[in-house]
Amino acid sequence: MAILLFRTLLVYVLIIGAMRLMGKKQLGELQPSELVSTILISNLASISIESPELPLIGSVVPVFIIVATEILLSALCVRSRRAAKLVSGSPRVIIRNGVIDQATLFDLRFTVDDLLEALRGKDVFELSDVAFAIVETNGSVSVLKKFPRDTPCNEDLHIEPPTAKQPSLPLLVDGELNPVNMRLYSVDADWIDAQCRNAGLARKDVLLFLCNDAKETSIVKKESR
Image (cartoon, rainbow, N blue to C red; front, side, top):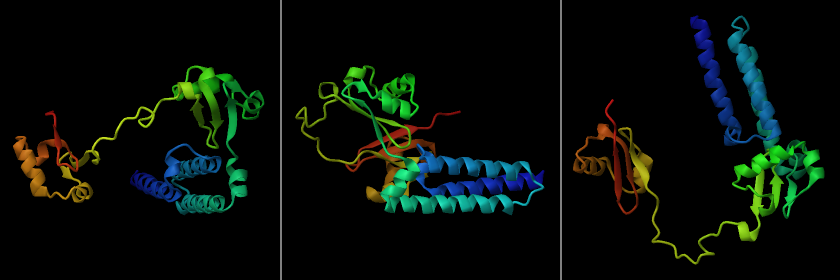
């Protein structure tokens, strides 16, 4: 039992390291090669956990071979558009001026229901509102609305920008200081403690302490349990 626990924890740590090496894209929508790598890694990890009689190295080495291959393939795709197109394909326009390109729909093996669901995910409920819809290489759908239906921006409404200031950032979370944000706003622990005392709280009683560059603060107290 102890050996199984050790192997499971070790594989868990190794897979986290492997995914970190492969980059943040692995945590979002995946390209085909990234999806294949993720599936293979998960299968190899499950084998090493479920079969304690097999040597651990037999799963660890293939995992990092896959990771190395994915990193090299990603580097190749960055340098070569032809390689990127071969590995991931290219974006396809599926709607033009409110009209579905049925040939592209068929090539991509998209159903009309798939397309309408993707449009609803972009807050588009009328096909006639769409100027262009593009199926990206990761399978997501990007939508450009027609001009009368598009959301206006501040420039269109001639709204003047407010006085520039940075958004409020957390300096204290669940009683723990955030030194990065403290340096950004040039404050120290004594200043934070003083603000907490003014609110009648100790540092350990604070769930969230927010501050902006104008030194405006907001403090959320922990709820008693």
